[in-house]
Amino acid sequence: MRIDVLSCLPNLMTSFMSYSIIKRAIDSNLLQLNFHNLHDFASGKHKKIDDYAYSGTPGLVLKLEPIDRCIEFLKKSNDEKYDEIIYMAPDGEILNQKIAQEMSNKRNLIILCGHYKGVDERVREHYITREISIGEYVLSGGEIPACVLIDSIVRLIPGAINNINSALEDSFQDDKYVIAPPVYTRPKIYNNLKVPEILLSGNTKLINEWLNNESKKRTEKYNKLNNKNLT
Ligand code: SAH
Image 1: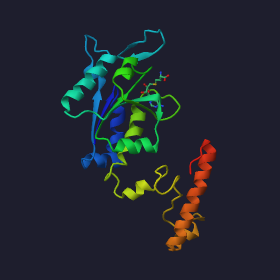
Image 2: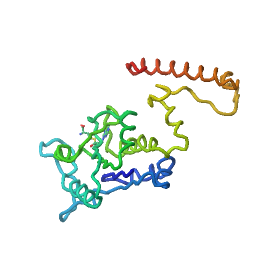
Image 3: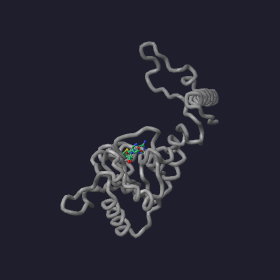
Image 4: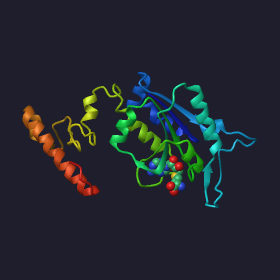
């Protein structure tokens, strides 16, 4: 899978992508991840990538031209068509596991990070095929949202996680649990805090029953907290 990320501050993301599952996916060629700095696509004497809003709304807007030049450059340098050109937007469809799963089956994506007041609306109207939000709140830029989206996608690419069953048993995956049950590790007792007896019993049947039951309890709690009805 290939992901091209367009941003005015790509350095915000590089460290995040240099560790753990994303790094391993890059090292094992499951993922080709490229950052493109919009400043490199600016033109004119001052190489400006942002400007004031025509409406007089306070705050700067990312200009159309550098974004157009970057997307055109990418389309020309890759023979293949991009599956999606995504804009990280607070008013987009809210990211969930289903979207992450769907995106993990794509071959190539462009992800555009906005900044300041956002991007010139013509970008959204004419270039973007999908808009994704990471929740109903506003951040300063699309870089953290892009990291969140990429992480959620990459861990689902077959081979990215050593044991794919591990990812399939996570919450919201709809494979085994709606919400995953609790997990414990060694030691068995720490400062009088004990691991549930049943997990040490070695009885797989009982352990599975316990896991299902805990998962159900967690799902009910989640539903109550978030006014949802997941089953
Ligand atoms: N003026 C916009 C907010 C711009 S925030 C509005 O009122 O809706 C600046 C940039 O941060 C956006 O262009 C977007 O790319 C990113 N961003 C902020 N919050 C986000 C969120 N919850 N999900 C995805 N992207 C977000």
